[in-house]
Image (cartoon, rainbow, N blue to C red):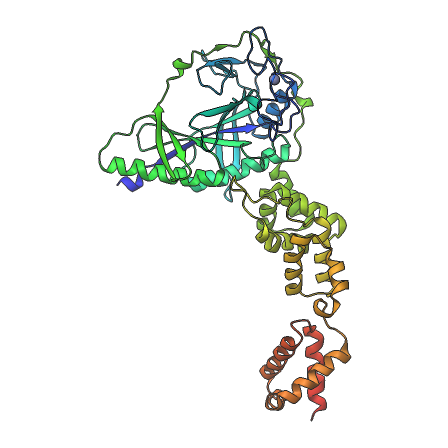
Length: 479
Ligand SMILES: [Zn+2]
């Protein structure tokens, strides 16, 4: 019976607001990446005595945008709290965050929901809150100690907490794809940046205790971590071993979860309201607009451009692809052919990045102009599909324009529709295949055989329609 034990999974997603200019409470850069270690710091984010935090208004607006997009209730007041704990990456010994205490909600958003997947399953959002990111421990090769880089300390994070509404790891992955697409469309987070989107998961089976898995660095690992943890908990249940409420870490090298520490109770953090930040009144919310969201964009693609549900979904799941599509159809308005080239061919060349998402990298030299040209050259019958595919694999590396390649290599790329050249090929094949030529006068399948020979001889470049007409005409003349 164990295999039928219900699984419950809830998520805590930490999204860095990478599109801000500055950190959450000071004027240090939000973009700490590739900066010299411990150069992006000030007395506020280091928590030096006497320094006072100043809340970044734009960060609050971004959190409100996310809350609106996820259909959350937004209270009139929001409050920040101190979460006290000692860890070397936390210079103040407390983190400024938000905490629902004494029965009141202090988060920026609460009780929202997201529809995801083909069947529009609903995942409930418990709360959305703002908090600061800690610094980073850096483990250098050959050193036994860790070094600390505070450049990241104080960067704004939005924490999105779901209800335990997921029943298997695959659902979680589909949900996270949707969440990523929403955050990208809101332009609050560049999810391609390493560490910009991190996830903790809690998981329980049957009536067992809740186990939290921390530090899952990439979305592709979430599915693996959850699958591992479900198997572990089910095996323990079969053997009547008690599952403890605990925090486990995902070891991405060994692909297992391992015990981190016995779980702290919330009172261990001694939360109290942050005395240096006043209560924030959230007003004039209607002035904070959200951009077009993935679901709206998908409907527009289907209704305005006639794309299929499937093609529209693939484009929307990855904002880069959807943007590429819209730029390309501005150059050559053929939405169906352009979307098909992107979804069936270009996508195959795009690699998964470290977060498990397909990302168009700078090394890929293909842009909207290339795709528009390819689609037009095929639609105009200048090149055939297989030539187009080989041109795509070439321009991804070189960035050459398809029209330039064709100009340079007319002899090997363009479709042959010149009747004189085609007739020469036909005569040549008639000479080589005398028996088949005789057959073809009475047997249509033999015509296909001859056509195949001509296609092979011209390396697929003969226009099949014109060639077939000419073949039949020539056969009639041969009588
Ligand atoms: Zn600072």
